[in-house]
Image (cartoon, one colour):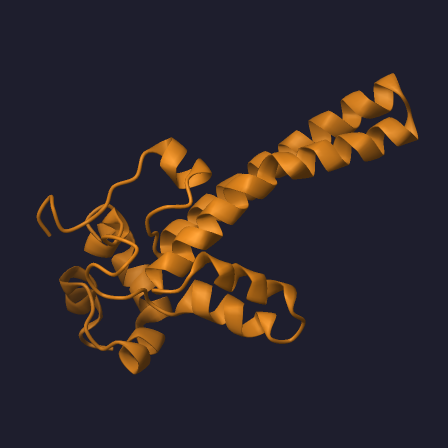
Length: 164
């Protein structure tokens, strides 16, 4: 892909902006990173709160730590909805019991829309250039669903998984 055919977000755009698109792998990896950071924040704020005030301080520290990771988590989820050509309001589906399973399947396993959509260009992940060593691995995980939902794949992934 050439330089104009994808969107390459900055660090702050990944975690604080609700604009743009990110793919499945980016969502998974950045959400994992955010979860680890969130667990560390919660542990620190709970520990400090417990040392200062006791049990109530630990509870307050937990709430503060959780609030720190809410915005970035929502930003990642909304950008993944945009990649599927859906409004960011689709994130609200995750709050409905049972139906939230469809939300998880769509966000984690179904490939985003090809090319530019109303939310912008696909992210750099769509070019598979930065994840080239991982394409055979992630391609085999996502390959079946991609072939069922959207048969056209990245050329790098297609070459790696042509025999499957």
